Length: 80
Image: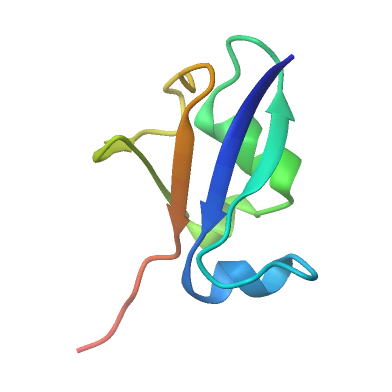
């Protein structure tokens, strides 16, 4: 298992009890785990279309999460 720091932003933060806004949480995923694995472990459904950013780079669902990284997770905003 590898440890990551995850910071959910916007309405995604409300999915996690006792999480202060802007504060991260430690998450463990399998070594070689992907963005899709991370979102599944966090219980964020695919239909949310969450955007995962690591070191300023937007990752795709099949990208491997870098060990020890800090990931920001955003929910896309729609409107007009």
